[in-house]
View 1 (cartoon, rainbow over the protein chains, first blue to last red):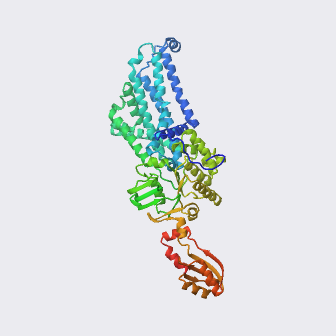
View 2: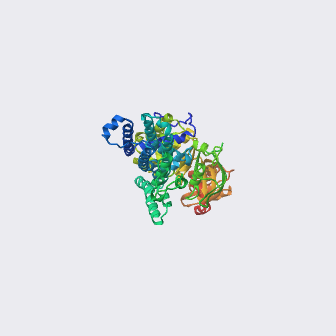
View 3: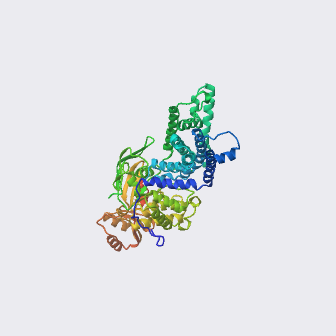
Length: 291
Length: 313
């Protein structure tokens, strides 16, 4: 083809390796996610707690600033595992909001416009397609979870007078692992739910509902049956327990005892497997015939 | 090399056998895929693309097995689906570039060829508009552009003129003819419109109820019945017809001096003129009847006998 001659010409140039096609999908998905002003607004919002946490770390490690702000109060700022748990928890709920907004954008455009037959007629598998979308979502969520968390950890390590980092490396590992588990879970769940709903705004609502409605049901179950196992439906509670254990922060002891880590892990795996099954059923190169 | 090679291909969908052990080699430059609704045309295309697995037998595209070598096959195919298939919130050029990159073109090449493909199919002026704002004809053309941009060896077009107005249809047919004429791309065109296949293809595969009803070279098939002649005469038509029968021709006379006849191979048209001269009959018009694709299709569908009876030879 030639723009000026308007005739077809065959392509005889270089072909990119097969594995890079997933990155093409991820790049376009990432661009789609960040083309929305709401995504940018949510990301900006996610920076506000980080700024507050930075200020607190600064004040905690600076005696002059502390003296100016506290004005004789004897209260101490403890920058410890509990503090980083609060950081991780705050950033993680912002990540949920971003997932609820971004995940439907990544997948529902393709489904509502029936783009899958064309996309999957390329040398890319269904697994590759989902992986590309997952990479884009994970990259977006990383920017608001483990990256700021580790930056705050690094700032605390830099600001603290003593050998703080060597005593608290577990916190860094916990932040990374806890955040990665959460964003991987959110990404898979978000994409799976989005793939079943045609309208993006409804998909956003369903993602929130999938997190909070079972939590309410689990709470009622636990109260009525007087059992702790109802909390296995309470994802916010489960994740809080898991994060505390990963960071080495004191465990929750409310509701008469906490959940075993293996039960939490098993529940997360089950939800992820159900999400994968949903994606497997939905992401197919079949044509939608509109009446 | 065969474009498509089918060996006992059987495909089951939801416990229903859609393709029932079809065998054949498609070698044409532009292959038409015909058949009534539910015959298995789209299933065959989807099997070649690796969307469906064969339950028995094999399907090969350029020698690559549709089950094992899906990536290699898809690398060489451009596919234009029957129904709307695009990403509505993308501009035309971005969408085609995206598809070209997924097909393996480097980013710069993909962008350059996307512009070229869009100009080629006639969407150059609207290439920066979002696809959701395109008309139906434009949406068909952008599907064609994305199928072409990466320079495939085989272009699969599923109902390319579906829903197009006469002008848009003519434009689509013209583009397909140009692609065929250029020569580097083989075409597999599925359509229920005989006229589309007739205008664009040199080989036709007719499917009926999941089986191959006919696999023909259209040109050869047209020429195989070249001895069917219609003539218009003035004069003693009955005597003329009787003499022609004596030559060994099947012949039927109609009102107005019209005569239809099938000539054996050893008889030439000059013999007819000689008889006419002897009988004092004027031959005012003589036309050889060529088989249309409709004839081939109807024969394949098993209706030809009934149709011939109606002619009343």
